[in-house]
Image (cartoon, rainbow, N blue to C red; front, side):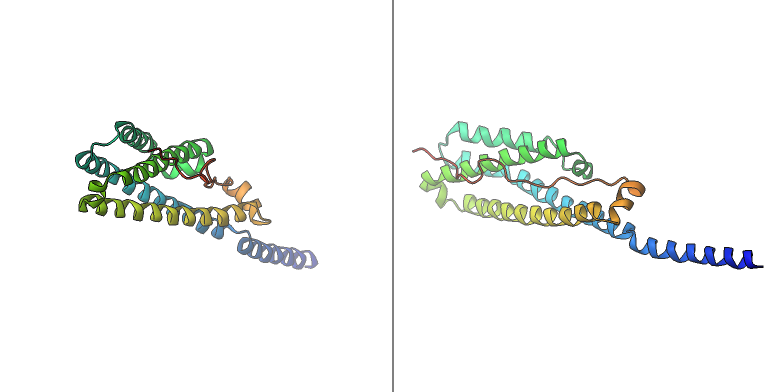
Amino acid sequence: MKLRVRSDALGFAAVVLTIFYGAGCGYNRIQVADEAVKAAWAEVGNQYQRRADLVPNLVATVKGAADFERQTLEAVVQARAKATGIQATPELVNDPEAFKKFEAAQGELSSALARLLVTVERYPDLKANQNYRDLQAQLEGTENRIAVARKRYIDAVAQYNALVRSFPTNLTARFLLGAQVRPSFEARPGTETPPEVKF
């Protein structure tokens, strides 16, 4: 009888510990954080796609409105081709090397667009063209949206990485889910320097 009471008490204690551990293991919080990262990444991809869709219109408008430097336009077209060649898939955030390549390609496109927008300031007829002004406003708005989407992704990754690295949720992340730290955006070298424009 004494043995049975003792085994019942141990069984009850095991159930209570399992419930407390289950509630505090962070499994659900890690899942929520993982979904937040995926959603934030999807928005980053959405904004990059919007920009990629606008670039051909910008190039066509500029070509049609000015005797423009071929080298600048070709740099934009090439950078767009390179940036759209790497798809912003959900799996990309799990591969740090592919993530860096994607980030570098998008950075090249950002630089090429910045040079294009700064260089067209030399063309008064182009600046007066309503189509160009509308397109430029959309492109500038897109760049702002990209910055906001990247910030949201950075925040979501920071929360996720904190869960994956903090005790006791790191145990659940490592042994139960196999979850690892996700890569985040970093400032590219040279971004603190504005593009150089030569007249």
